[in-house]
Image (cartoon, rainbow, N blue to C red; front, side, top):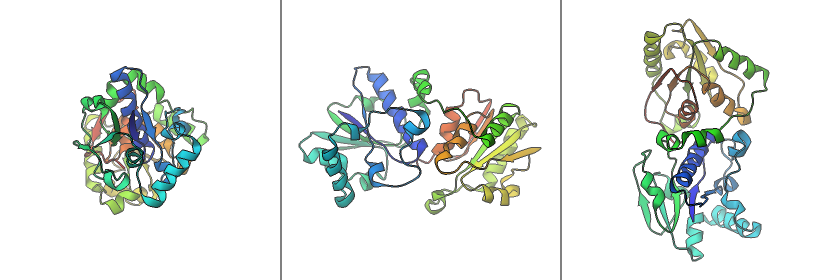
Length: 296
């Protein structure tokens, strides 16, 4: 039995799903890996579990494996006693090991069994071949997991049709211009100390302009008002035309990722959200990245 911990926002969930689908195709032994969705029974963060809502994915969720009364007890133990799912499985007599690339693994999933620790965000296909029962805790933010079976996995990651008028208008502008997207992640990044310097955005916009001077810049952010107020420092008005994307909040936040994935040129910030958008883009002309991708 192989289980991948599922947590975080949409981008993290997708990267974890990509890892599982890579493993299933790589091993090609008929085994379906489980996604442990217990996180979303205990925590109310971001927009909850989104793989089905956004992409229509019918994932092999661990919550569907157990009878409801058993699962309810496991969730109660996790919520009230902080006994992780892998620890509970071990306590119930299952021989199971853990493999993690995440420094927060032991906060979210305390475990007293055998633990393998590997370097974060690197491509290690051999880890999918560990024998026996293994619980994986990681974000696997690396394009090689997708590229291994790109056609298969990307076919499963198709956004729903855009129906909102504002997003139809944005998508038409993106399709009919030399569109360049840039994403500014703020929110929880402020307290985590992961905010990037505005000058970095400005320098990379200049880099794109040195290659193609006729770009239309599309600015995406979870704090678009801040981006407008500080547009000069970010360099957002260096292109002849700049459009700030507004209106996609809460359960519609994924539309920003969808629109970003349609842009001709991409400036990837340090969030998994913008990195995933670039990977789902089928026609990038210029793609540049600011810094190592953060997992949250």
